[in-house]
Length: 507
Image (tube, rainbow, N blue to C red):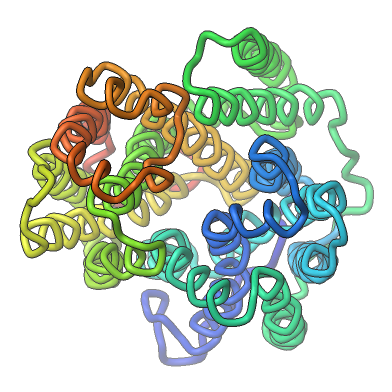
């Protein structure tokens, strides 16, 4: 891919190429402010699904589409972000995506039926899906390879902390002012971000002659969307054996395989340039990011469900109980960014994954009355691991690549994370449900659990009686997350040992 989306930020005199100057910090703050909205929205709505269903007198299946529609819109648009940034300029695309997200949020809050809400949520996902990749592209272009680790740590804030704080914020909003305000809080924040973006982000260069690779978009977006939808079906309907699930996953894999053949033939002219996989740092970062995303999102499914199902915690209390993970990530992010810039991702990433592995191992032994202090300490360690893993992986993916490849890197990483998140969410949800179904004590006293019913619908006394068996089911499911994390540790060992290769040379 020729050209670049934005011009790099210019450091003030005297700061040197390795300093985080005021301009770069300002860019990072604007991007984080914009990115945290769609990431929060992906988790915050989970808390309100029951209330939304009651408000519209809708079935569980219908309300599930409020979540699925957002994910599909989010996943479908990501592959086109690199082209859009080159064609129209990154700042213009970033501002447009913010506007689409803000307007669709207002429409979602004002929806008068479940059908309207689902449609507006798809539109919201389209806007939200472009914000993070384009913001990441702006930061990568402005930072340059010597500052990549530290500036990417700023982008790690919304990615790692948003999923944890979403349930807390959602619980507060739903319990105090109603579910519609989950969406109404976005337009003012979006407008503020648009104003700041117009003032602080570089205008960048546009390439009016850069035509959209429509065939590649149909293949890649179709494949990603089919897999995302298929995994959503598997996770919500209890398995991978359903006809629709199998058909969607098969279609998604076939479309991605066709795209790989097509993109290899087109080379740098493809929507996402897969020939960049010849760069070792990029290839290893992509594979490791995929496996870590599967493990991370899978674990994020299990952690809140454990507190709600086994320990009987409310959504708000669950969010607060998960806070140590956010604290650990906040501690690790800035340190990981600095060490990555100095020593390289090959030093930081394996250490981060090992920390996450240690924390998850504690949860394989979880019981119905495991002390809160033990679980909080394990969560803090998991947070340290996450903070020391994702940010260096993002930085490593950019190291040694020509600036003209930034759009492809951004699109590839975000696509991989979306697909990995869908796989992890479904895989661990199905594993947990299968473990619950296998527990004779549970299926005998709560036969509706075979269909995936939430145990909160059962009498408290029954839930407390079943808690030990349920805790065992969760512990077994956490072993899957541990195995996936161990696999990520193995792939991370192949990251290049040097900090960066000469720009444009494979290594």
